[in-house]
Length: 120
Image 1 (cartoon, rainbow, N blue to C red):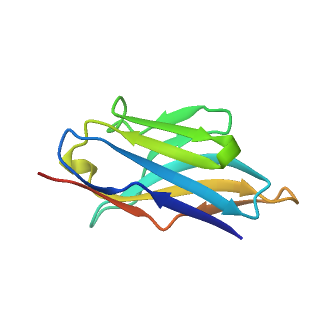
Image 2 (cartoon, rainbow, N blue to C red; image 1 turned 180 degrees about the vertical axis):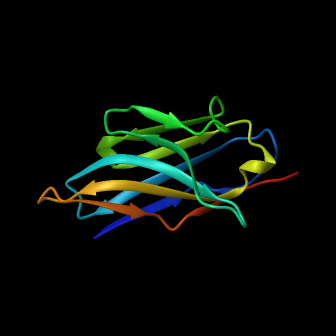
């Protein structure tokens, strides 16, 4: 089994910054793509940013230029640096990853989520 554990959420003022981390652990042979999603109250879960194992990235238009996704393959960890935060960034942020086991079977996993609240 694989666990994804997010950390780094919290309360921040508009214009502030936060850095989220997502650690993958368990029966892992290799972690392929990793991504961050978010879900605000009453809204559908949406992709915020994604990164391949080779470091290719993609971003939602609403966060491009403000958020940066990165990863450390040796640590099976992804990061989301969030700058110039806005009230509309308030949501629960979820980590998602495609993980291969030693048999090279790939499965998709979700973390439990971390709350980000942007408010003065």
